[in-house]
Length: 246
Length: 288
Ligand SMILES: Nc1ncnc2c1ncn2[C@@H]1O[C@H](COP(=O)(O)OP(=O)(O)O)[C@@H](O)[C@H]1O
Ligand SMILES: [Mg+2]
Image (cartoon, rainbow over the protein chains, first blue to last red):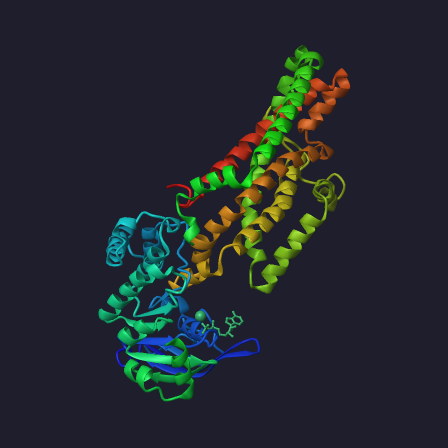
């Protein structure tokens, strides 16, 4: 089951905030190793979609499955399934009272029960991978935005997730710091990580994405590989969106 | 985010000298401070030279030391219990479980909404009268240090009332501290697979604690001063000794000086402790 099932699957998902219908009959399958880029105007439901994957938001109908296991099932051990889903946020959300290394080792020690020594060794490796070997003992307040976001990526990777969610992770960064974060994400994609990426970086969508999904008003209105999406969009909605972002 | 770099402190200092103050304002402020200090120093000097009876001071000094020890005992126990209980009250006040929230809220409303003096009476007089006359089991007194400290119903009342009362105030401080922690902190912790309890303990509460420290410290200073009410339940606290000395010796300033020194001997170290804890909870920003 786990091998054949998609890494992430949405099945007829509807999500309301009170009266507001935010996700409308969303179907989506993310294959193992795929990089799916989600684009769309502000307020179209992109963040909500990502947050349903690890059940930071509850859905009102439909099902979300991680490797075939329903995370929307009310009886499921959500903490267990969340370990398979790494999430990186727009505003980093690093733990300010912990050093970079402690941010990265906390969950492996607390949740997976890894011996501290092993978690630290792995944590240092991950920080080195995102180019922050020297900053292991720095507190978030001592790091630049780009460095903080790279620590946040390392923190999510430390749980060995099978899929990574990125929600506009470069939007809060000064323009000169965007590149270093995108580079880390690109390397991760090259290593075969399954990724769901909400971004306004069309260059990244085109070059790294296996598929681009356009959301509009809570619906997925177009879903295609980058060349088709950018060169021959099928829907009017996609054409209008592209004419604005170009 | 960009503003939180390590060398901002120096920037602020220059801004403070250059932009936010004006030479004339600075001199006027200094003049007021100097005049005020001289006036106070002159008055205190006058009191110490002309109005304090040093023989009497030496004679009654031990009684203030004993009162200090008694009050310190009550303060330390009540304060530790109030802060501990206050964390749970604060957690109840942010609980999404409506029963937990309602109980915590009612608790806070009662203990903040009625006077501490009244709460002392409820326990001191109300509880024993639940038993038939003369049957209340806690009527004796256990001597801990003869002449200094004994544990009796008034001591127990003091600790219980101060704890219950101040747990409500600490709870509000903790609630404010928790609410000031960005939502994203809990979300980041939960998204890593951490349980609600672990996320609270490891991530939210340490930050809430820092946010709430000043308010909690402030409340503990008030707790110290609230011990002055214990005289009504026959607990020999600091002002009780003051009144005994004052009425027996017809001297006001000698015991006044001793009272000030005795309270400050508790409140100043307490304020230093709070400052130390606040400094220790700077994570990176001001350290580098
Ligand atoms: N916690 C919330 N409560 C109420 N409405 C919300 C909440 N979060 C998002 N929304 C609404 O849901 C819609 C989709 O939001 P979001 O998923 O954040 O969009 P996007 O990420 O595409 O900008 C918006 O109309 C937004 O106002
Ligand atoms: Mg969003």
